Structure formats: C-alpha cells, structure tokens
Length: 359
Image 1 (cartoon, helix red, strand yellow):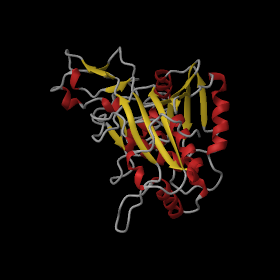
Image 2: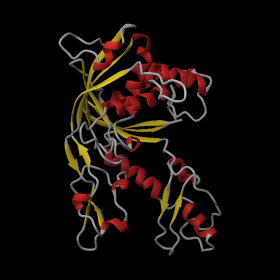
Image 3: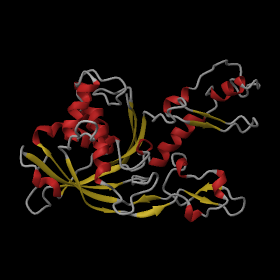
Image 4: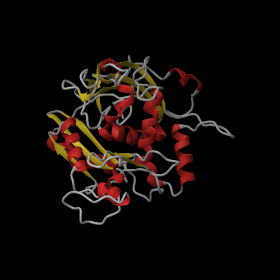
C-alpha cells in the first residue's frame, strides 16, 4: 500500500494520543456505481448529515476482515481476540478495546434521489417507476405495505441515492498491513455501503489512492485478477463454524458474468427464484389439505430449498385463498442473511457481474 504523500490530509483527528507503532495512512476516493439504500442511523434511510459514515465503513471492513483472514484462528475466542486488537471491541463488564484502524470521513456527496417505485393514483397500486435505475426485484423492502398506501403519495416512498461519492482517510499500524489490505480489497470487490449490499446496492469503485488514479481491469481480465487477489488476501486454514467467509479457490462458488448490468443480474435471480419447479407452494397446499397444482404436482416434497437464499420469504398464494405464508427460521430469529452476493464490478470497458456464495 502507498504511504500518504506530502500535501494530503494527515492522520485522523484522534491520532495525537497514539504515537507508538509505525503507521500507514491513506486517502482513498470512492464512487458508488449503483444506488445507495440506507446506511444512516435510522434504518432504511441515508444519514442526513454525512451520507456515508466512518463508523459504517469500519463496520464493513471488520466483516470482510473476518471473511478473508479469519481462517487462521482455531476458536471463536481466538478470532474475537484478534478482531478486537485490530478493529476494537465495545465496552462491556470489563474493558473495551479501541480500534487500531482509524477511519475519518474527509467528504461525501449525496448525489440525487431515485425512488424505485411510485403510487398510481387510480387504484392506489405500487408500481416500479419506469425511469428508475434501481431493479425493482431487489428493491422490494422499499415498498410500503398495503395498509400504508392509502395515506401516502409517491414522494413519501423511500428513496435511494445515485451518484454518491466519498473520500476517507484511513490509518493503521504497519504490522496490520496485510489484514487491512485484505479487508479493503474484499469490501471494494464483493461488498459495498449501506443496506442490501449482497443484492448490489452501494457497490463501490475505488477511484484514487493518495491522489493517484486507480486502474480498472478490462472485462476479459476481471476473473484472473480476482483469482490472484483471492490467493493473496484469503488465508488458508480451518474456519470457525458460523463465520461467513471467502475461499482462496472458489471456482465452484463464484462466477464472473461479462457485460451484465445490475438490472440484468437482478432479472436472472428473479427468473431463477420464481420458476415453477420449486416445491414450497405445493408443500404449503398439502399442509392445508389443498390439492397440489402445476406441472410437478405429483412430487411429494415437504421442503423449502429457497430458504438457502435468505429468510424470511413471503409466499403469496394467488390461486389459494387465505393461504399466504411467511417462512422464517424460528420465533426468536426473524432473518437469515442470504449467502448469495450479486453485484456489478467496474471495469475499464464497462462492467462485469459477480455472483458469489459466501461459505
């Protein structure tokens, strides 16, 4: 990583109290190439003061550090101790630990609002807004429920933000260089900012580091570049159960899809999840003592394989009155994050689509 050249902002404001260890400091400029959803202190809303918050950036980096470097720790206790040393730990009954990685927001520009949906005055139906850049299939959490629509206008619906840019100053001890490099690369490649990043929201492009333009790969080189970086940043080892992570060799668990836009990626997921071969609707009908329907009505399968793509799932049984159901994990946990990541990756000659399964 390149050290901060003269003339650029130096350490974050709280750095004066830390004088030990040689530190690496960088100014990194980003633009968000898809829409930003949420990310503020209020759920589903961007922050009204700083559209991208330094605490959010550090939180994402913490996750991607675990996903790339966590395999070198045999137990969850060891993993937590190493994580606390680098990224800090909240105060509890004993003592909290301050993060060794400092992230300061230099500037952020909110871009412009893009509402994926609008309300038709006739019938009060919620419809995708034709001029929106946001795929409506992955934007469903931005829709109000039916009971709320009667009292809303299109301007009341949740917006996303497009054209967002931001600049951070990040500083860390040189002994953690490999750890921070890995977290930054994975966050920039597979992650994002805000909510629903696994469905492409908040996708990042690194524009400059310390004022120097960051080169983009060509589409044809994207797969090879990612393979090289995986081998460089993802450790070999045995991962603690329950910790989502990448693998050094994930040839069976990820794809690079040339020239696919965010909307095209979303449409592929939509077609895959909504085709008629899934067994859940007929499993619901059998439990309710209704007759199965469709081309595979003879299959007696009582299973919900689409739960692997995230929970809860709302089943709207259009042909069966009063049979709508919500599939969730249990009464205590109402959400299971999907291990599937779909997002575009910026290239010098367009973009490629990434499809990745977290282990």
